[in-house]
Length: 518
Image (cartoon, rainbow, N blue to C red):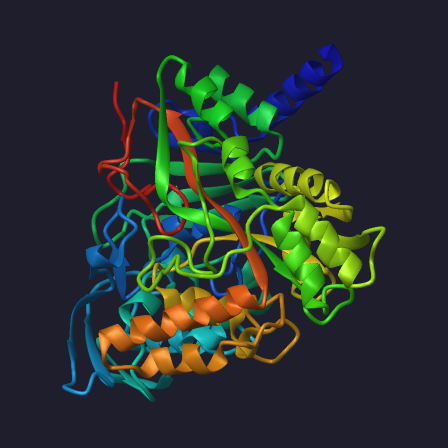
């Protein structure tokens, strides 16, 4: 224990030396501790990791946004667009842009050309991880220097949801992206309240205040986004004052412990990230539905919620998280039943059990979850072998179809279509040209998902979404476990300027309003 503390003290001292001087000036710098070993891809159209989303949140804008501190689409408001209109048939949208918005690092005024470039880039599978989300867009064109027209092939459940600064909705500056090429992944350029300044691998990313921000210059001078994968080290750094804001370990004990620290404010934020175990239907023994059913019967959701804590987790039964628009819990859930699991394995020709393998992130909150599930599966003679890898490597390898079981924790724009399309439509199967995050190779609900996307009657749309969820559960493409709420804490002298109920980007809304009080 003494050796661990000495090592941690040396690490903190070295990092303090690296970011000494103005970076530690009281009241001007926000030091954030993130539970990751390093940055992934800082290009917002490529990165889907929780640790990177926070940085995107603070650097980029979209045509519209969800009001800071909220996570529901009912709070969508103008961002880079001042206003918009829609044709009677809902297929043509025209957005009027703010004038005078400046790209970071002197790349000039943002115009309609940047919006067209960004949306075309977001829809390009060679340049975006979210291309399939934009398949319904037929054309994006500049109808003026500060006006953009979007024409749809078909109606979609929420076009505005695709235009918030989240995943493909983040607007990048064309000139910067074209000049830098692949370097843009480590030196992103947007228009948000904070601009990329410096990246030190496995240490930190520094953001500087965008003094030309169109909503006004930020009150903070900079943000130091520090990579501290160890929960204990992050907690110690927060308690000692080395960091002002901390990404929490996702369990009840962390909430209880940090709440007792004087001057700490603990916040449980929406939306929950739903932990799902996706089962690769193309790989034996998971190509046998009886084996998949056995795995489902061996997982005790109530035990998993108790493991995390009642105030930070809720059980999940549907492929769509609660309370997304279109969610239904009227699905054929397989109840916890160890003996039934064993019987199914025997029926499938595995009386002595089976072994399945999972490549998995070392991100602490997720790792403890799969280890808990591993213990539950063992009771049913299911041996889950876990190969832990760094978080960015995990994301890369599971997209190469290298894992039989994929534990994925995700939140998306809160409408059933997005989750169903990205995780369960055949267009999104990993390894294909239009790949997103369909790790199971599930295709049983394609017809319902497609029909719901173009349904003009709201009740019919919900019926189709419900039918899709039932089919996916019946086929055991994935096993939803629980939703884990977003846990953060920060120094109570930090005033974010808004009440924080949630954040679609899974990080607190650090905007131009954030400041430290005396």
